[in-house]
Amino acid sequence: MASRTGTPKRPAAAGPVLMTLAAGQFLMALDSSVMNVSIATVAHDVGTTVSGIQGAITAYTLVMAMLMIPGGKIGALIGRKRAFVTGCGIYGCGSLTTALAPNLPMLLLGWSFLEGVGAALILPAIVALVAGNFTVERRPAAYGLVAAAGAAAIAVGPIIGGVATTYFSWRWVFAGEVAIVLGILVLARRIADAPTDRRAHLDLLGAVLSALGLGIFVFGVLRSDTWGWFRPKPDAPAWLGISLVVWLMLAGLLLIWLFLRWEARLVEQHREPLVDPGLLRNRQLTGGLTMFFFQYLVQMGVFFVVPLYLSVALGLSALATGTRILPLSLTLLAAAILIPRLVPDVSPRRVVRLGILFLLAGALVLLGALDAGADASIVTIPLLLIGLGMGALASQLGAVTVSAVPDEKSAEVGGIQNAVTNLGASIGTALAGSILIATLTTSFLTAITQNLAIPTQVKSQATVQLQGGAPFLSDAQLKTALNNAGASPQVSQAALDANAAARLDGLRAALAILALTALLALFFTQRIPTSQPRTTDT
Image (cartoon, rainbow, N blue to C red; front, side, top):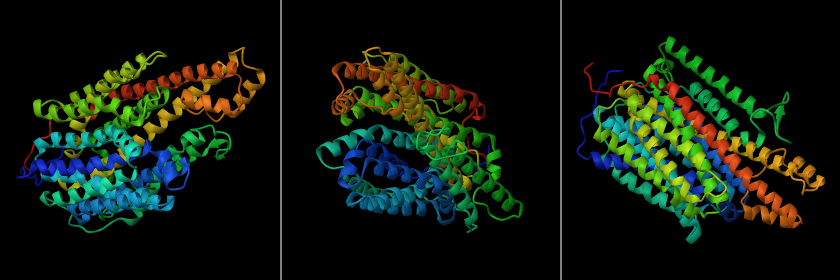
């Protein structure tokens, strides 16, 4: 473990400082979960299609992924507090632009670009500012609350989006974000700045290579549901018979490898790198980053699967769906706050392993509870378990990664950490979605082709039309489509029964892969330390 230099004493206004940083993290995570339940309404209001809004969501993710590592370095150069405040200002301008956006280009400018740039400055700075404002012993609790605020935003986002879209307008959400940003800027005066790197140099080539590498890799992952992971879907771009997703991911990995080689060369020449490749040889740091990756992969996969089950399979409104997810937020906050407070000397490795086991248990309980006659209540216990797991991980991982390096490296680590969580979140959503759709399609077509009541011509048409993947449709949506197609009552009922069964098969398959991923994460916990970080003299 690295020795701690310049460890701060507890500030007089520790509570307001922590709430300010937690509010920033909450704000960063809120947008996507709010937008996901309002896509159709937003598309109508700005005169575009659902695909256009999904493209804006993709662009927002890409901008954050590309700029996270450079954003961390900028914070180290200009000051973490200044980076945080500047990022909040840019983010607030983006929120205001989004709230007033009359068309898709303005939405892309405000939400996808400005908010993405702001987030890339804010998130690494938050990591460094927690390190700069709290003693080593208090950091697990501080990081736990900050991380819990972000996860809670994802959980309550559907409620906020549902209420705003149903009773007011989605634009009020972004107007509210402007007000929150103003409040954060006022309260940010109490934050003590973290020490900065005295050398004022930004590795521009490294910034370009890291941005392109991460951006191309994440873009490939995000396109996997449309183009196919390996075998290209009909009319999807391909090269040498292989989906373009594979080639994009390989190109991204190549650029990241070139980036690391370039950084190593700068170190050899005693020049300042964007990221010191030596950090990746730090056993504790890489252990924490690996756990962050797995946590966000499973976490975002769950946040993809559970709302689909509630809103599409059961037909709940966005408001009711968000209400059903609230138990996760309660146990998440409880675990993130209470574990460091009640057992401050507990082994981080033990807590992380317990957190992963809770994630695994929650996924397995939900997997076993999914049934044709099940209702919304079946998600309560699994979400309580998953929330406990996420909270346990949140209470330890931030302190694990930052305590692995000197404090002056905290913003650099913050950039890497948020890039890793972005990767995990993107892969988790894409993996759960692709497994779900692939299983749903296979199950639906199998049921249709084996049903003797369905004419052969209809079976052939279904096979051809669904070879690229069946959509995840509610019973009401499918009934409307069948009525518009003039299907007979017999065929319609057979299709509805097959779709209901296929939906459950797809959800089960997605949960199974998430459970398997959680189980796999247990094999990588050995690098998590067994003792809490403590202040040491250098």
